[in-house]
Image (cartoon, rainbow, N blue to C red; front, side, top):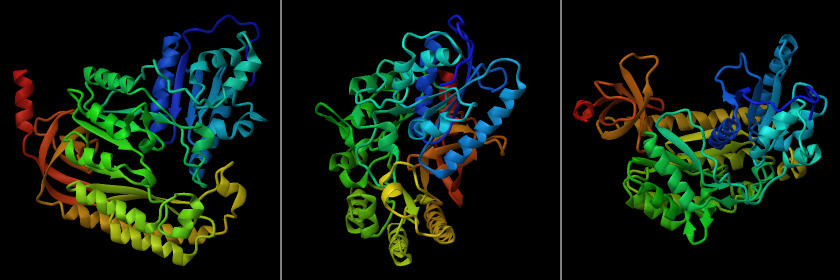
Length: 465
């Protein structure tokens, strides 16, 4: 942790700029950080120019995320050299937790790092990095990277930037220990939030005009607070008056509860979309990944979901080129994807993450060229499947919650169906936040094109109100 002005008085009313990289959990964490800093008298700015403090909330899941952060730090180093006023730079989140020594040692562009469980200490960390005396600098520096078994940020009201959807973390950490994943090392053990606090947060969101909430966790299936399980929490949230849609990410196939499948099927506000990470389709590779399910068990779970939830939309994650994965084993993944027919798939080339079992014990022996060949094959397959599924929706009608105006098409709006289908159609009087009945007229790639059937009714209701 580098020092700034020694002996300075307490720094208040600083302008703080926050950049967020990575997953939705990082977005939510940045909203927590904003709340903590505003409570201490600091100001949030949406531009780097004029900031006194720059905080970069990082992700450690993919190699590309690391490259982005290191590139950004080089930019900040140059800016810092040119500026006359002092600039404080802090690295937050998973990358700070996982690569703390690399980020601090020999990098004068970074003043401090703070892991995902240390955000309550940020005001003091900022002070210390700017030369303001703090009670116990050594203890503060240690606390900045300590993983907690209890921290859920109860009592911190996120500062959100508006919109239709709000993220809510309901469980933090992960106990699964998949061999490729760094999350257990960067976010610690699982701990669940009090359901009453979650429901109260949803009520507050309704008062602020939000129509949809998405419940977050590294493995939401593991949520448990006393006798309340995740399916119970989903129902409670969906029962909050004013909330129109409830989504969640991400579950684990190993313990997807029947109660949750039934809740999604039965409750009209629980969206009929599940993101179900596959990762691989070969049993040996799945075992090496410690995914704790087989190809057959995954297929059986999909069958149960589709047999219970009408018109279910399924998306997934897949890793190609995991250590020792053969071409024949990859072909099993291809066959599973072809058979299951996901609505969409997020595919990634395996890359080593520092500290994971795979990085320590397995040799990354699949060549870059072979990883590229495999991901190209899988992406092309999924594009075809997505196109066929979406083309089959032409002529059907769906409710779309409008999220934004289409920047490329004046007079058009963009939203998603209950099944998480990206949809574009003429506004025809409808506004952001309206739920509009549309007829699907076309499909291109992952996007549906539609015409509104009920926009005038929404406009009329607003006029009467």
